[in-house]
Amino acid sequence: MIRNSSVGGLLRRPEAGAFLGLVAVLLFFAVFGGLTFLKPAGMSSWLNVAANLGIIAIPVGLLMIAGELDISVGAMVPFGAMTTAVISGHYGLPIWLGIAVALGFGVLVGLINGYMVIRTAVPSLIVTLGSLFAVQGIVLGLTVLITKSTSVALTVEGPAKAVFGDFILGGQLQTSVGWWLAFTACYIFFVHFSRYGNWIFAMGGDKVSARNAGIPTDRMTILLFVLSSTSASFVGMSQAILYNSAQVAGGQSFIFNAIISVVVGGVLLTGGFGSVVGIFFGTITFAIVNQGIYYTDFDRNWSSLIIGVLLLGAVLMNNTFRKMALSYAPKKGAK
Image 1 (cartoon, helix red, strand yellow):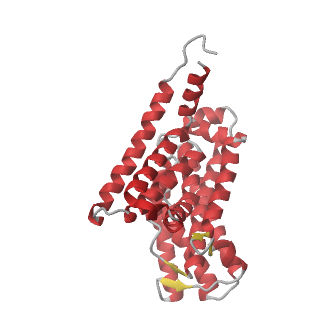
Image 2 (image 1 turned 180 degrees about the vertical axis):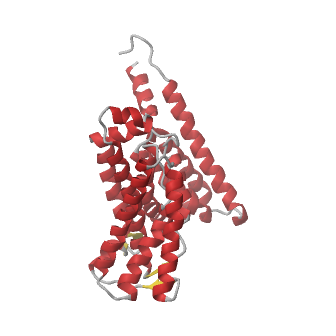
Image 3 (image 1 turned 30 degrees about the vertical axis):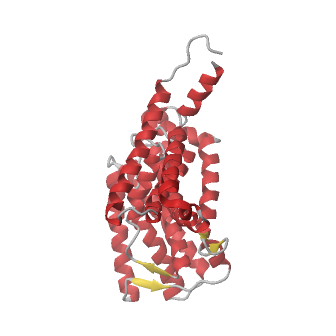
């Protein structure tokens, strides 16, 4: 009976289905993609995608667990990139100033989003949709006004290049992989080993009850929006340093890719259920599916269909195991 209880306990964990989905897609592409997919070059392709996406997906996932949603991240990525490039590329000011301003604007947008959500009755989806278009307009308008172009070159050397935008381990992995792992470890502690995690889950379950229980729901909501927008700005900044340029376009894919990764990772769209580890697995799953298709012999014209079917299968597997776990109950007298 102890063994059954242990199995039920493992299946109840939000990351259980996400891990099984990850194993399934990994085996799929290991079979159809061959050894090339599993070689360092192949693995680095999807790890780099997972890293940049994962830095954004975890705070977006925490917002979803808390019952909110932030789609303005799609504009914050080019915003962070262009801010860094204009300050340190166009004007030639120190790169550390460009980095600080880019992250500072990320904090500012997060504060505005959070404040608008807690002070109005407007859903966070609508608030951040407005922020998405507003920030896009600011990025395009100011960039063209200042530089007369929609792209800005940037040359970065020294510690800033090594820390934020370089290739490591033989020039295959981006430094963002290290940041992703570090951020994930911090979020695991923050969510699963501190009281703040309980507050986030309580907010997603019933925000009114959470507020009545003494949880500072307003402050937590603002904090989560700040983490989300700043993380997106961080990714944009690091990509500008990595590729020595920034574009006003781009970043839109991060919106849906982050949400897909979060859902594949076991987070409920209704809030109150999920885990950082599950989001971590979900991000890797999405990255493998996204990049693995290029290592197979499948017709590229069908790639979107194959990606969609595999991701849907991963989500259904996740939901199936979660429902099985929640319906599992050990018999009375079990010890």
